[in-house]
View 1: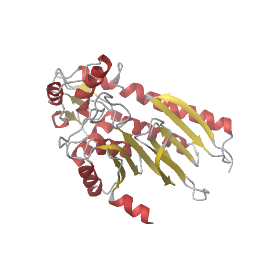
View 2: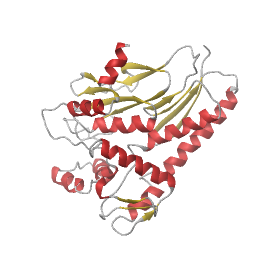
View 3: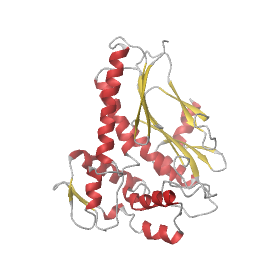
Length: 314
């Protein structure tokens, strides 16, 4: 098979890689133009939903404790999907984690890690149940002045899906969109081989060193890890960018989660959920929801969900 056409762009704090194998409908230069247009959709989504500069998302945060904020259909869609995942995960996936994570990132930048008392005060604003979404009036209201929402656990997966759908609607075949660990692939029926996706070794300094490999014809795969953003001065590895819901010091924390599913929105979210639980509870939740998941714990042991085990036996 000939070498694929490939382009890389920066977005959402990482790299988006677009790749397609030679096909009859488009020449290489035409594919590159389509990749650029697909990535413009990613940039639009990033600008609209970012926490780090003025955006539609921060209009909601700026009105916290003051008044409901008008929203559009796209924002309502993401908030509604997030509400579904909040319920399915029994509150583990919670957009109001941003009430905590914003101050957590600032503490790392300042070199002054948050104390346990600080963390508890910040966590008091983390409760998506309190967010008031009015679908008829098309508004959302955060009732507490210090409450914030963030789409970090769902936004990148959504952006990958949007770029993927743009390319598929244009008739591109045998292609992939990889947004820094959130990847969606397409294969025609007669494609010579499946896509091979490496699972990053969470203990290696080299980001290209893999701990395993999964093969995928069509669908999405997302890998989340505590190596992405953590407090390097914390020997427990528990002080990282995802708010964890466990406190049992004897339970084994998840340091890497790889989820396979139909869309990147789904795999991105479930990867985030698994990272916020200990290994036992993460596996139980993945099994209950029939999710294909591969987890690596702090001791370096791999754990497969029931659906993943069935896949390996085929």
